[in-house]
Picture 1 (cartoon, rainbow, N blue to C red):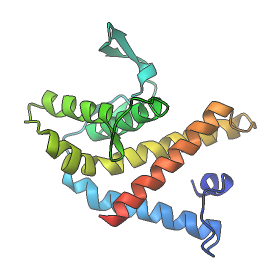
Picture 2 (cartoon, rainbow, N blue to C red):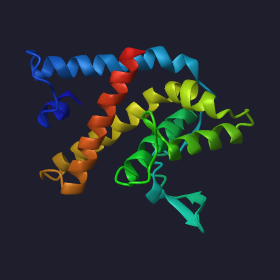
Picture 3 (spheres, rainbow, N blue to C red):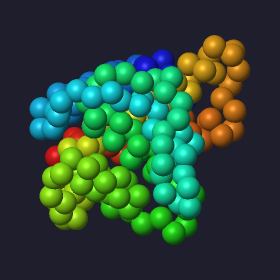
Length: 187
C-alpha cells in the first residue's frame, strides 16, 4: 500500500518523507476503522465482493441480479454496501447531473435506503445522510483503498504502467480515500 501511494506521489510537501506520510495516512484509516466498526456490525453474510454497475444485470432500469462472484466471501454486509456506494460514485463522477450529499452521492443514498428497507428497518432520509452515511465512510474508504491496490497490482503483474482509464480510477480512488480520511479525522 505504502509503495503504491508513494509511487503516484500524492503527498503534500510538508517536510515529511513520502514514506512517513504514507504511514500516517494508513494509520489514520486504521484508527478510524477501529473507532467506527463497532457502531454497525451486523451478522456475517455472503458478500459479493465486487459490487459495481458492470456486475449488475438490469431490465428497464431495475436491478435484477448480480454477476461475477469471483471475490465472494463471508463478511459484514456493510463491506458490500460501502463498496457499492464508492463504485457508483466513481461511475457517476463525470455525470453533470449528479448531486452530492457529502462524500455520498444521491445514488449512494438510494443504495443505503434500499439496504435499510430490505433489513426491515425504518428509513429516515436525514438519518441516512448524517449518521448512517457517516458510519459507512470507513467502508467506502476501504473500497477506495481496495480499488487502488487492485489497479496497482494489476499494472505491476503486467509490468505496464496504468492505462489511462485505470490511472484515472487509481487517482480518483486516492482522492476519495484522502477525502474520507479528512472527514474521519475531523469527526
